Amino acid sequence: MGETWYRGEAEGVAPSRPGGDLHDFGDGLYFTSDVEVAKLYAQTRANGKGETMRVYQVGIDAPQLGRVLDLTRSPRWAQFLNQRPTPKSITNEQLIKLANENYSRMFQAFVAQERIDIDQYNVVIGPEYVRGGRQLCILMKNGQPSAGAIQTRANFKLIFSGGKPVAPASTANVRVGGGSLPEIPTTNSKIGRMMGNQAAVAMAGVMLESLMMSIGDYGIERQVKQQLQTRFATAIGNSLSQGQGVLVIVSLQQWQQEDFNGMKARMLLSVNIEPGPTMDAALKSWRGIPRLLAGAPPGWDVIETYSWIAPAP
Image 1 (spheres, rainbow, N blue to C red):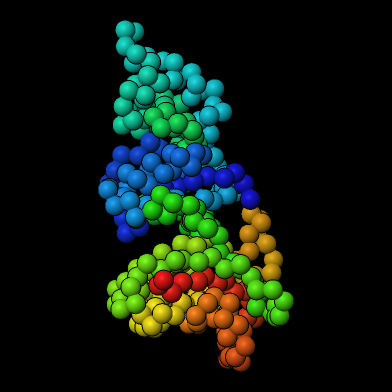
Image 2 (image 1 turned 90 degrees about the vertical axis):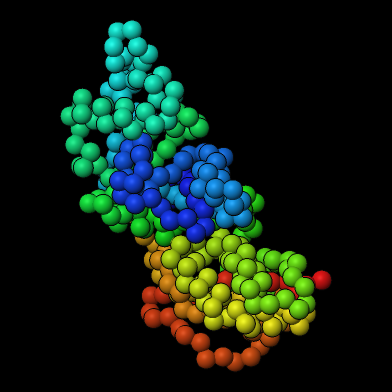
């Protein structure tokens, strides 16, 4: 699983284009070892829109991504930090701490001085001098996200949304029948009974945050979100306006074999909703009616994740 790292983002805010911003180690996908620092980055990217703040957690085994330049373990970097541009000036480390914009210049100077070909590296790890902790960057290759960055993002798990922790969603094997009902996270709707589809779309987005803790896949998140906010928006709105709650069922196919990170590949099979006065009633209705659903090929298991949008009180 590797070491746990965090990333702060803002919903709807696109990442900077290659060469568009000054980054400490160059263009790439950046992480922090400190969840509080990730929250600060999410807050900065949200630009005053706190509801868009997102913090993700992911396990990264840096050597599995390729060659790593770890400044936190480099005697050459430590020596470089103690150097002074001129005999009477402050040290390179003090320059970095004086203004974070100096980090990139100092790193480039270090790479040039030590004749390091940064193109031969996939990951850079270094101290975060201004906000604290450490930072990790999965470097871009030829102006594009690397395969390691894409795979890492696919393993993101949402842990904070709008500054608030996200409760994990329930996951159950589709073949399980009878017995006690699984614990299903509840989104308590504050929408009036005569609400419109716009409010339903907003509720679907909030509900999705709890699902992400069990799905754990950024790509699947986007597919599910699109269906909930387009295909199912009217039905969700109608159910809530009639005093019914809505159970959201996401069916996934999961590869039976783990990869080198201990993860199992997942793909989206289907998204469905089931209205009901309570989540227990909706789940019983979903399980009690025979349905023609997509199956999985050999070597894959089918699982279902659930989340509940409660009716307006």
